[in-house]
Image (cartoon, rainbow, N blue to C red; front, side):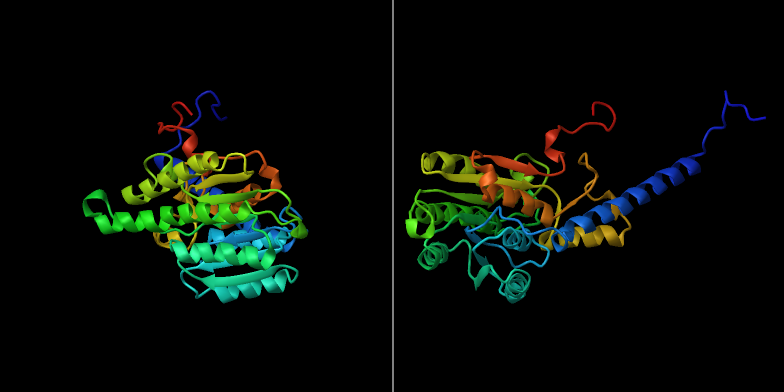
Length: 321
């Protein structure tokens, strides 16, 4: 008869096997969840949260990127005209064709240009206003991530991060706000207003999520969102930044492929309370909220979309949390 008062102790092998089994099940559920998130537009009814809005999105060239996911979501939600750009033109024709095929009622214009170029950003904002008579949303999403530790980071690398990640956002604020202030009653815009969204990072909130130059550039983006909100006071132009955590995009492909090759995919994102990584479509939902009138009173904020990672100081698991 079994001794329930003194059950046999699990061996180290049994504990390891149970832990591995649990990890496998969690990875399986994570992959299922992510697959559903990535395919949700296939079955979701069309919405109207972006109806009539003219939008510019930079950094739309990656097939797994935040910019592309946001463009498709904005189209799904009824945007009037999408101006989509990237420095690399390779995937822009595919994005344009996809939007036109799935959402033939949405105008789409793609153009390859440098999002950190003063003349190019000014030109696209002016073009949007000339063609559509209004500019409602500018999502400054272009970005670049370096890899070197402090000792190997050169001044050139540091300034490249600041140029691509920060200057691009400054130019978006400067030139988009100018067009957003213009009124045009004939196109349904009789008041100044608009939404400028900047892609920052949790690396810009605190240490531990990026290289020193990348983190500094994203901290500057977060500051831009706050200071610009006051520079544009009483114009009804809102400026906010999104701070993604670990996202599977073209920029992070190497990290994910390395984890898969080592059999450690299930450990990716394990430090946040959700215990997983995110995909571009989840950041796009934040960009939809900020671009739509749903966020009409949200201004000057740095919004973390990181599974809860930035909600806590580092702790010993189970000790305080």
